[in-house]
Each structure stands twice: as structure tokens, then as C-alpha cells.
Length: 281
Image (cartoon, rainbow, N blue to C red; front, side, top):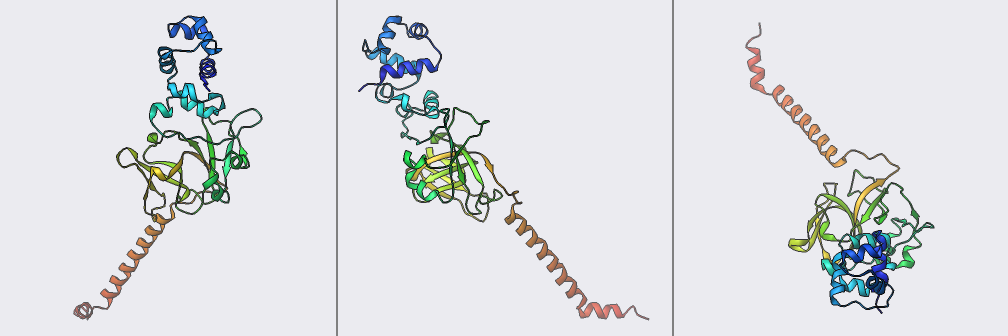
């Protein structure tokens, strides 16, 4: 089954163009374009190439994928050039939910839900039972999800905070020294600062904000999803970087102890005591 007719009509309307507009830009007659959109005529190879270049969508996608079934965020990313057949990246179909206004929800993945999310992240039945909310100030053209932070590896962001993130379709665009939620095969959902080594080593190096944790690497074959950090919500006021403060306090205490030892040694030095007696009456 070909979805070409419905797809080119959908893409045209999303750009706000008329049939006359597109026909003129593609150097074809309007009745010809109308015939393609209404499945009265079948396009040849030259026409397929023209539509592919105009919409920046591969011929395979135009013919084989029902674009009407994609979410708004998926369509938006497709229109920005993140087509699997164009970029060569693996297709990442994202299960998502929408509200009564057909706007995408922000699903909440709690600490308890992470175990189920590990295997159910692509299952629409699992995703639709997650709690949802909306943030009106976020872009409607992007997909967001919120994950609960566990542990102390990302202090000063407190444990139990909710980090809201934007779905990343093209992993090559992951930026160094930015925070991401990485869904991995072995470790599940982790929140880390990322170093992108995909082009050179096929890996991401993950760093914690808490310096007591060593960085580690994860291969792209073990990654299931990448979400870029946007903001976090917490009922706690973030504390100062406690490991750094602790080291500073320990250093200050050690310095005081050294000074105290020096002072005691000076007072107990026999020569100093004898020398002092030379000046006595």
C-alpha cells in the first residue's frame, strides 16, 4: 500500500501552500499535482525525486510511511531533516500520549515506574498509564518527558527531583557538557552530563555532577533513548556541592591541626627553653 498521495497532501497543508503554489515550484501543472494527491495519477521517478527534494523527505518515507500516524513532534523532526532514510540513522518510534486538545502530554516516569519503563518504553499501553501534565511555556513542536532523579550522583540537584527533557531523535546532535537522560539497555534510565564520542568511538561518556563518581562509557548499541535536559522541579532547595565543601572543611581542619602540632613542638623544644634562660636576670 502506498501512502504517497495522502503524504504529499499532508505536507503541503502543513506548509500552508496551495496546489498552485506547489505545482509552480515543482514546475508541473496544477491538475497533475491534484491527480497525484487524489490518486488519479501515479507519479514517475522524476516526480518522486522532485517531491522528495522539495519536502526534504526521502522517497521511501513518502511512499511507505503513513505520516498521518506520526505525532506532532515526530513530524516536526521529520520536516527538519531527521528522516531515517536521509540521515542514515536508526528509526526511533516514540510511544506518546495526547490530551483532549490533541496536544502531546509530558509523561512522568517516577522512580517506581523506571523498572517497567526499561522494557515498556516503546509500548503505547504502558506509556498511556503514566501520569501526565502540561507546561504551557514549552514548545508544542517538541516532545517532552519528565523523569524522577534517584541517588546523589547529580547533586546539587536533589534526589527525588523531576527533570523534564526534550526527546532527541538524532544522537549526533548531542552536545558536550550538557545534561541528558540516557535510557540504556543495561543501566536503565540515568541522568548524566554527556561527552559525545559517537563519531569517533560510537560511544557516549557519562559524567556525574558529584565528583566522587567516576565517568563511564556506554556504546550506542546499548542506548534506547536520549532526552535533553530542559529544567527540573524539586520541593527541596539545592544544597551546595557537599563533596567540595567537605574537602575544603577537611583541608581547613588539617591546616589547623598542623599549626597546633608546630606550636606544641616549639614550646617543647629544650634548646629554645635553655636559650630563653640566658636572658633572665
